[in-house]
Length: 332
Image (cartoon, rainbow, N blue to C red; front, side):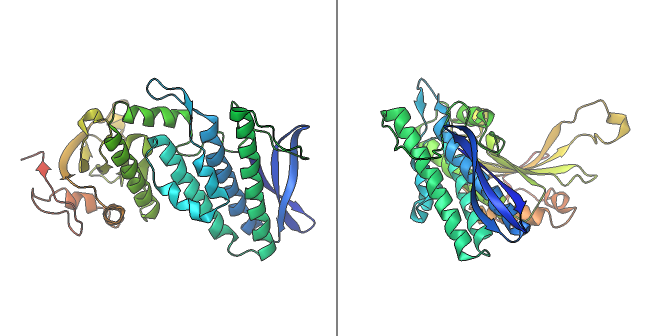
């Protein structure tokens, strides 16, 4: 329910919390820091935490024939460090589990950001999270249970239709479009497959966060990670998790090396489209670990011709220095 910002003031940097109150939009000082470079990551993390906390309780769960609110259990992690582990488990829905992952990331980033600041600043940040969590819970109780909140000055107000957050759904995974796309992937899935899909999503998010290949792209709405080095040979790599409902026939973990059929940077093909041709696949009967995917992505980006080298791997052999075995070549 709050937007955070930083402003210079008398030689220091103030971190401000701006929110809707009974008198309109209001601001209060969270804390002051000597160094703007230290304030920036704190403000960024606080804004992401607020967005991840607020958006789920402001959205409607319209999967299937239901019209319901999303859970609010994730709010406990704002004030209880032991509750953070629960952000990494569960199978309510792909979208809600993704938001919980993003909240866990933001809380971890906040820990890292405040590690170098004085104790009074850390205490103020903790108090700010407690204020945000308490005001949001009280607003939800008033909305769903008609429990009037305590009369206090500068109470933060919650608007389910227009949540007051900095990102406005712009964070990866938080938008209504992301929610609709992930709902589509689980439509008709069994509870078992939904649980497996949620775990697969966590593996992909963790692998992407840990890998050092900056050109690897996470596609949460497609349960995949792709890497394209944009070399003249036009190879690219896809890491694909199964779709919970079997959409597109994807029911196994698959690593694919493909090749564009033309170079769109070539003036000759300027007004045309390219088609990806399958070179080989590595199908896994069991899910890979995040570490296996991290090693694959890191190695793929270490040398410009790495995908071209792997593309020559015969069926039955592993891609060099990885655990992924080629199960099919499309030129056999």
